[in-house]
Amino acid sequence: MLGDLVKPHRRTLVFAGLLTLAGSAGGLAMPLFVRSVIDRFGAGESVLGPVLLLSVVVLLGASISALGQFVLERMGEGIVLSARVRLVDRVLRLRVPEVDRLKPGDLLSRVTSDTTLLRTVITDGLVGAVGSAVLFVGAAVLMGVMDWVLLVVTLGVVAGVGGLGSLLLPRIRAASLRAQEALGDMGSALDRALQAFRTVKASGAEAREIAVIEAAATKARDRGVRSSAYQSIAGTTAWLSVQLAFLVVLAVGGARVASGAMTIATLIAFLLYLFFLVAPLGQMVQAATQLQNGLAALTRIREIDALPVEPAATQGQTTGVPVGVVFDDVVFRYGDDRPTVHHGVSFEAPAGRLSALVGPSGAGKSTVFGLVERFYEPGSGRISVGGTDIADWHLPDLRAAVGYVEQDAPVLDGTLRENLTFAAPDVTEEEIRRALARTRLDDLVDRLPEGLETEVGHRGILLSGGERQRVAIARALLRRPRLLLLDEATSQLDAVNELRLREVIAEVARETTVLVIAHRLSTVTGADRIIVMEAGRVRASGTHDELIAEDDLYRELAATQFLVNS
Image 1 (cartoon, rainbow, N blue to C red):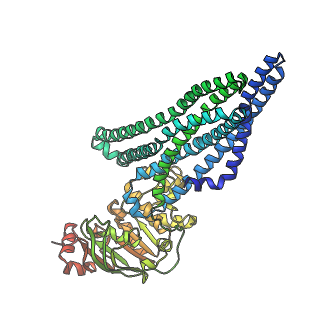
Image 2 (cartoon, rainbow, N blue to C red; image 1 turned 90 degrees about the horizontal axis):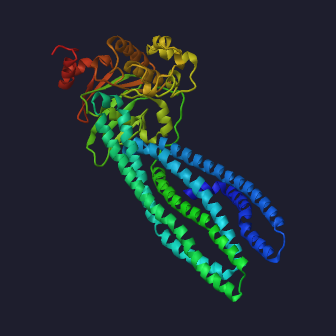
Image 3 (spheres, rainbow, N blue to C red; image 1 turned 30 degrees about the vertical axis):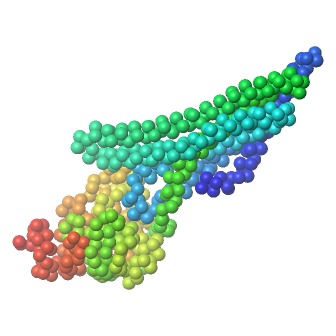
């Protein structure tokens, strides 16, 4: 994957490498000038000319190196941007079961900290590797020109010691992967506490949650320390190899000077080049260790790439006639290790009518909506929408035809207008006003300081529960759905607003198909069809009066809500 990210920028990489090579010429030329100066001293000649020329070369090389560095850094930022956009696109199109399995904090960690680590690898590791490789090769070539015997000795010592350090690279990658996983766990622990922030405070559980997060942070620290230990050992090998090479070269070179095979000036210049290798060797080792860290991050990113995704969604208003829903002997469970939720569920919600699902908690009512939206696939049985098997619908078309109001009626951080038009961004002002009036939100808009442009806060915290619920309903209505799913649409409304919303639901049911989940039977007593569910099965269906007369469970539910004399 790293190669795929770099491939579109290979010309830029080559250009930056050439700039780095040209910029390094000044530094690489210095030992040669030193040899020339020593020779001139020995001959009694002036050294002013070589010193001035060296100064110009060094300044020019520094300027070119800075340009090459900038080109590489800019390329690295572009690569990281591509990786982040690609990962975000993938995460937001994951199938719902995959997101259920992964913790939100861990997903956030992959998009933020893992891509940040990838940025370090590309901008620092890649830049360092390219620059140091150019310097190393350049220095080695010039050392070979001066004395190839000493070059072979030097490379032999460096390769021997460096080879031992390279054995640590797999350990660095494994340790970095474990450290990143621990960091994701810490993010998940923090996300859990923040998602239930008020509950944590109301329960006096701050200390316990802090302890959980601290334990996760400590685990991440311990794993990071282990990774750092391996990196420190690997980094030391570069310094050690040059020191050992210096001792060997000093001995062999001294012998060659004594034998007349080379001059003292050449030996001094060679030793300068030897120390010139310290920085590029260290950078190459650092780049190698950073690459291992990056490969660990890429492993976590690839795990997201390997997960199944849904096709790109569509937004906007839909057109067409209302569609009915039919469940035929549907069996479903949320995972192979989870209990069965639906045991052969069968019912029909006729097109253009108001149907309701009722029953005790845990009966499997909300799961019906998850299956209709194809968040999940049934284990067996058949679900049809508009007379077509749901599996034969193009998923974006299905979602575009369905309006869905979730049980907790989520409101996003942003303005009220942005929330209302979230599913249909092209609606007109007249349509917005009509939806506000139908859901009794026009008074709210009048009270807000900036009307529709008022920020509603994180998760709509500035709105009441009932207001958030009505915003969610208005958002669904603005899409003009062919099928409207309302999950506990009136659970947070007072009696007055519930009555008004019942009128809205009845009105909408004349235009489209409405399927409602309700614990308050008062919301659905006028439904065309009421489906009674219990323990993952449909036990009865009919009108309110029919079920009062025929079904004991429905009669009990109605009696507890004072809708019938017990």
